Image 1 (cartoon, helix red, strand yellow):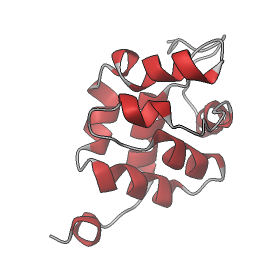
Image 2 (tube, rainbow, N blue to C red):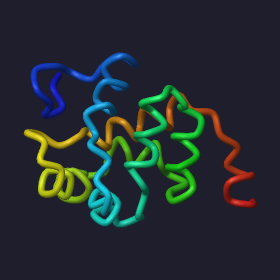
Image 3 (cartoon, helix red, strand yellow):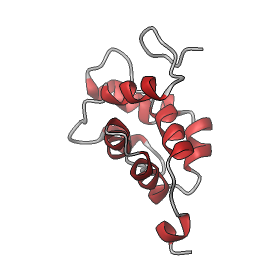
Length: 117
């Protein structure tokens, strides 16, 4: 199964970390501006790149308590990935949704601490 990336499926931790390394960390963070919930993909992807999955998940959950579900079902092609393609200069967009769901599925966070519940 391919996720629109050049020649490989994102299925292992290694693949996902390498996908994160393709991010060019745009200064204006267009992917965040494209997200209706203003999740900061650049920040959580930077944490994935250095294997800090707990911090990556925390970044997502700070903006979106449903981070894992949204990472799986959001039509990100019309939101963050669209903005990534327009502004990054990459041949294909970073698979932000896949990286978000990965961060939220492996990162351990205390949602009560993040949201003060």
